[in-house]
Length: 232
Image 1 (cartoon, one colour):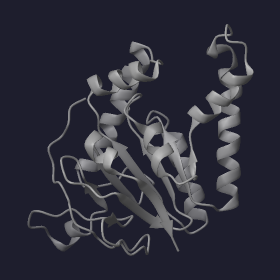
Image 2 (cartoon, rainbow, N blue to C red; image 1 turned 120 degrees about the vertical axis):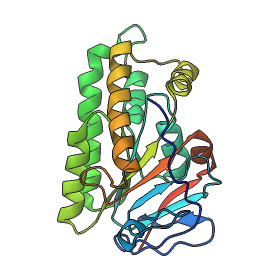
Image 3 (tube, rainbow, N blue to C red; image 1 turned 90 degrees about the vertical axis):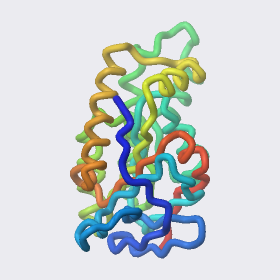
Image 4 (cartoon, rainbow, N blue to C red; image 1 turned 135 degrees about the horizontal axis):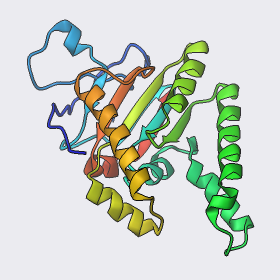
């Protein structure tokens, strides 16, 4: 996967789909790109590229919306959710860690992986059914998860947004090494292909299917982000 050099947007925009007004240092949920002359239709494109920019510390979306955070394994998704989601994060890694505490250390994760998946998706479904806002970890390869989230959001009159972390394979593998947990070469290749497709869609000016907006972050921009919040 390579980084695609497209527009870097650094100013606040108001998004009609979220209805959230952006304050100083924050970005509303449906942003616009800036920096070049655009047609009115292009100006309304719900894509914000914050890679290589002095990105904001806050992203705000409308109360009841759902945000998915996607990117390569080891790219910093779980770290970002833990730091910025303000208790609204739903991460399969949390379910795995809870089960690891209860399982014998010698028992391979593959043995109880199905139980972890069931626990994670059951918890996700409970939150979605409640109508609460959520920030959801997404590996990028399971498009059916985003389709499910988009359908649930749409039925309750809310929106799904994508925050996509664009990291190099080297950065992602370093992240895997730092957490002491890696993925196979085959699985990593699948993730790279899926994330590359999401990036191509975003950089063409259109969010992936079902998403009302997409925000692109590199590692420096992600590290500056302290809050993914929701406003009524």
